[in-house]
Image (cartoon, rainbow, N blue to C red; front, top):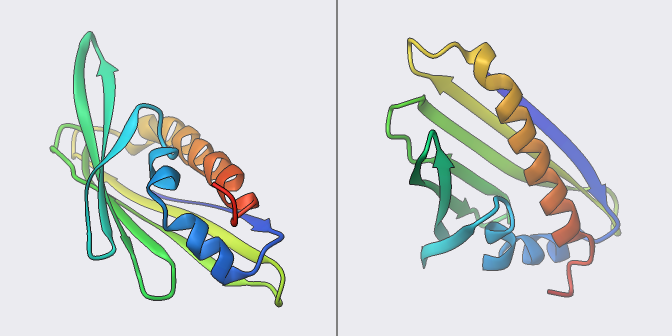
Length: 142
């Protein structure tokens, strides 16, 4: 399953890349998230969620490449997802604005129908895009 969203920001690409490369940006992508490990352009986040009466941690790894794009993946436990990967790509639109594209590719376990997951994954992607839009709209500020 492939999902993609994009939006434009009235700021140069390098400024948007700096705003994207902050712990607070990654922590804002999902509720109750914190950066648990950081180093070498890689951040691991932990998100505490309550599902079916129990609580568990969801882990994502975000890697910022030399161009400022971010590649991410969920550390899958195999319960629902076999793999869930994505990218936050920045493209300059002239000198003073940037297109931000967020895409996700997921493969569910054999017995979990992807159609059942597409709605929640779309909602999650929309929340990520809204959070990114707010955090990179004024890239020079925190």
